[in-house]
Image (cartoon, rainbow, N blue to C red; front, side):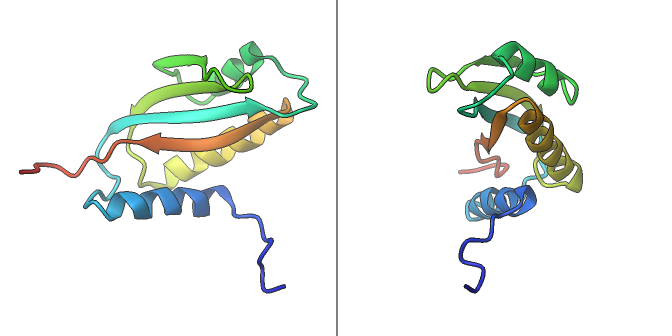
Length: 117
């Protein structure tokens, strides 16, 4: 099967986003606005308030609001995205949200490439 169906781990997914940033000259080290997404799984036992509680165990989001799609949440904060600490954060969010039946769907951010002309 050559790993065609191998599930990517969170740091591999993060690397994919960082590679896209790098294509624009952004190494991910600058502090920036980061938006994360999570959605309840079909048989979720946790409410949106429960999910926000899990998120707050890891950081205090600037905002945590409904996505308007499938009962999901978007939560935002400011930080860099290049470090191993960021990968640990997303790994923990994925694991801890899964415990209450939520799927951590990943993150996005704007390109921060320094001075541009």
